[in-house]
Length: 247
Ligand code: BJW
Image (cartoon, rainbow, N blue to C red; front, side):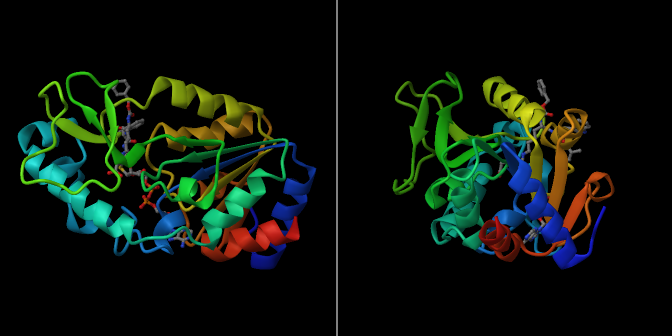
């Protein structure tokens, strides 16, 4: 572990220069500098809202209007956000490596807006909705004006946000793709995540079993910090462009 700012960046650059396959895992901290609130920590969504009221299948079954209201409010915040320098740096990094996979827990779509292409959105995308009866029926709602009534599928069933709530499995195809990329990578960058939500939180140990070097980029300590090979302490919007420039 190396928490010394510039030395840690130097070591991360050195590791990336030797790498053929790179994976980046991102979390809410990645979008914090774009004005999108994180979940945990000061100013995080879970300071004001209870996850069990808003981000579980049970909460939606109990009060779909409340859950939709929360997601529409978040869509409003995200609509006003633009990718920050960190998102742009990751999109640029993708072009430098033979294999570069970006795994995000974020549902805001900012990595796509920044130009990342080999991207897996493991917790879904807030701009999509899906049918509660037939989950394969997915609708892009970006640009839609919400009506008075709750959104419904043409089949009549309620639509729900196409995101992964607590207690729900991640898309097995997406998770397999993520695990395969992590097992095969030389360097794993873990950026702006509290690293407490499973199964994504288990991916760094998978990388280490595959002999990859794990680099954490975060403003704060996390449960991953003591396991990481290199720790770069600082905001991803500043650190990632620096890394990209030095490659
Ligand atoms: C900066 C910064 C800057 C700030 N620069 N850094 C034990 C073992 C295994 C599993 C479990 C377990 N106990 C419970 C579970 C299950 C549960 C879980 O993990 N719970 C934990 C909380 C304990 N997991 C699940 O339920 C998952 N499903 C599952 O396990 O299925 C199993 C199953 C199989 C078969 C059948 C049925 C089930 C699903 C998890 C879904 C998570 N969903 C949410 C909401 C998504 C939709 C939405 O957005 O509304 O996903 S919760 C929320 O947390 C969101 C995030 O993606 C996720 C992770 O949060 P993230 O990204 O790490 O954000 P923060 O806020 O926590 O951290 C921000 C970080 O950024 C901090 O570290 C800051 O320091 C840093 N930061 N500014 C750099 N500028």
